[in-house]
Amino acid sequence: MQSPHSTKARRLRELIDRQTVVLPGAFNALTAMQIERAGFSAVYISGAGLSAARGLPDLGLLSMTEVLSDSATIANAVSIPALADVDTGFGPAITVMRTVREFEQAGIAGIQLEDQENPKKCGHLAGKRLVPSQEMVGKILAAAEARRDEDFLIIARTDARGVEGLEAAVQRARAYVDAGADVIFPEALESAEEFRVFAGQLARQGAKVPLVANMTEFGKTPYLSVSEFEDLGYRMVLFPVTALRLATKAIERILLELKNHGSQRDLLEQMHSRQQLYELLRYEEYERRARSFRSTDDETSHH
Image (tube, rainbow, N blue to C red; front, side, top):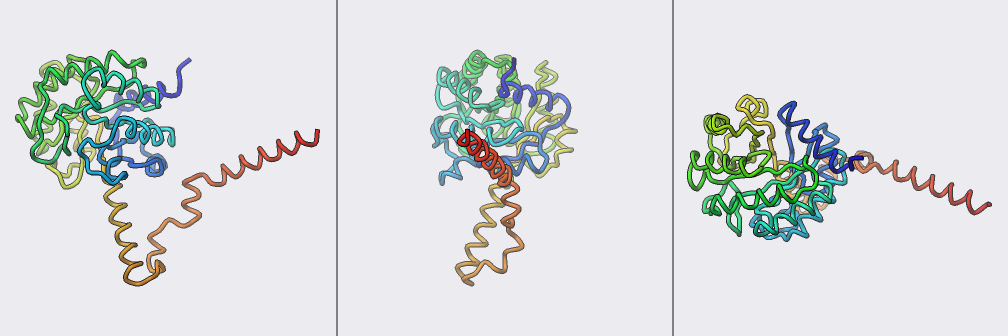
């Protein structure tokens, strides 16, 4: 019998086979629950989001234990598949093996590995450095060997476009597919034409795997819609930090309001009401369960 974890991994594969999947980024379990409730079929656990939620920049500062703990909490708060950003895999190929085992066991549907040196940077910043292609190939081979569920997705991200150029990004991607990557993620492409060229060249080289597009804000990539990415040949579209950026801006606004006016009254309409928040958290469902257990206890005590 299949575990629910492997079912989530298979479900993510089936979704990608059928259509282009939109994955908004979650930075905690509550955000993931909102993503599911809004009708999305999968969630992305962004490394930048997790770092920011812990008060740290996205420079590979979190340990595997921290990312694993946060990812497991997020993945298990929802019934939709969750894809986790594990940056460079937390170490060499042998460490990547452990990373895959731990994240798979935690209920994650797949991981995304990148080919930057440590300390890594946000993919849309200057000054990135890449590991040799062969080192990344070793990590992918290790990841593929380590997984116990063949449906667990291994996504290889290449940051080569901003360092070595588009052609090099295609060559690296081809090597990563040959090593066993299920999906390819070209980071920080700079135009719709580059997305088209990358997809076309990779397909012509016989590396026909699903592709990921990262639609982050304020970066190198122009604001293309999901349907535009779909037309360009991409089967997954990430919005990694969108919800976080909007949330922090909203928090800044309410704090300024409190500081300047000493009351939150004028912003009540912009808040979730008590009832709305309770609905999201399934408050009544928990209360109902608590009551049912109490009645069982009462019956037992009368016997």
